[in-house]
Image (cartoon, rainbow, N blue to C red; front, side, top):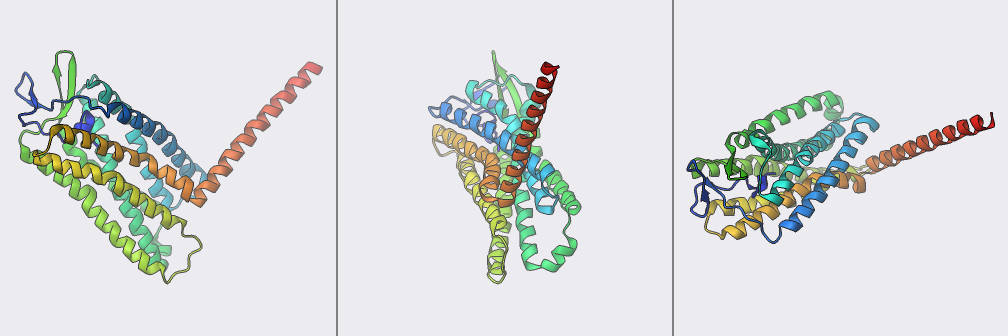
Length: 331
């Protein structure tokens, strides 16, 4: 979820004539604020606040209040990925506002890497959820005998390892450079082919192949569900909504990434488009908890029950403390 201006600038090439040159001869993106910067900053702050709160709530409900199942294991992992992104998002917002990176090389690499780790892990988990639902409907007996939370946990661990490996280019190519009192965090691609290869790999492995698998699973599900009577269609509505939100949040970003690789478009248009696309991509991190609350019946029921019990417990403690106070006064 790299955002192409600060850390949203991860795909900006470092060998174009429009860029400025550092003291060591490296070309840097001539980053400037756009008229949309205040709006995008505000949106990202909202994303951060709701993302932190919403995904923490999902982890709490699915992890401690609901029965451990394969699907809750996937949803918890998805929420952890989104939460991790939101933890690092304030650094991106600061860089977006000031165009100065005071957090050092390690945080420059980590922040950019976390954004792509979220992208890969999110889409891979959506693939797992789609395949899992497809198997449940197509092979109900087999899935009942073989699906279990610990196996899902192992698969999730594999997904995180694969996501981390695909995120390595961001760790390798991300660097910082100082211009007087201003420090930039940028991608130091030595040649244009490196930039192109990284962008294409991210697009193919992080979007095209996973989305094709998801679409195939969706078609199979649609065909199978015509002949199956379901107690509730809500789980499939959640899955459909998650897939649609991921698609619409990420398509603009990948589109501008490939336009930026061509270098035949206005730098200002590309810069603005990449920032808008990156903000939409970031918005995907708080869409999941919103969808769970408004579509997931089990999640809503558990949430209401948990909040109600917490309120009742708090009121009971308050009444007990007041009763003790009265007894002490009477004595």
